[in-house]
Length: 217
Image (cartoon, rainbow, N blue to C red; front, side, top):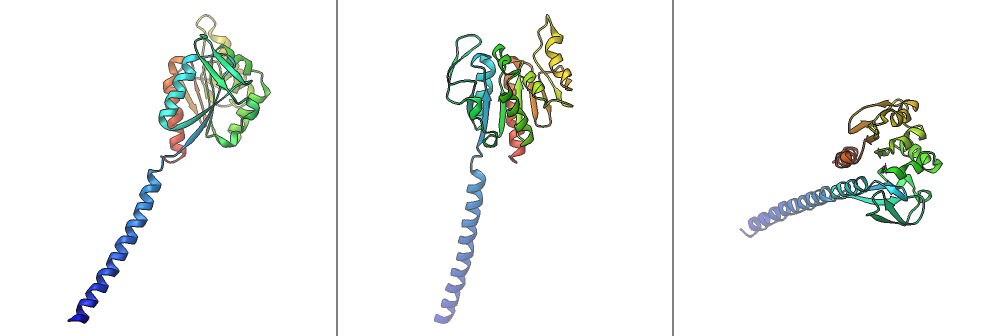
């Protein structure tokens, strides 16, 4: 009888060890799946005259999504928005931006974005982002930066247009070989463009979705 009880005890312990080990493995898998995936996004703004809503709303959408945002401009100090009501402390310049460290690079619009139209460092960042398979975004007049960088050839894109002179901004795209699409947000491969502040939230959400798709969420 004692031998039978001992045998039953051994069987119970053996089964318990299998169940316990299975729980440990499953818990590890669950913990791994529950880990929050982190995203790093570089936002590039003009030191003077960046668009208030585009900066704030896009940043807000991406942060809610779980992205860590780092801001870059042409120099260190307090960058000022178009309205003058918003300042941003800049601690990183474009020269500090290592594209390898980020999942997405975004150029924010506003009148000050013109300072990047012919900026070779901005152009190189855009080219490197494409070459390294990153998400590259631009809003308002900033798609002209991408056009001048030579990354929009054969791509669909949109851009802000002034009702009184609609063709001037569109020419930046078409001269660079892009196809202008008259809508708020356009996705063309890894490039996402938007046509102004009213599209900020949709633009941010589109970038978030693109990131999550690439990372398998």
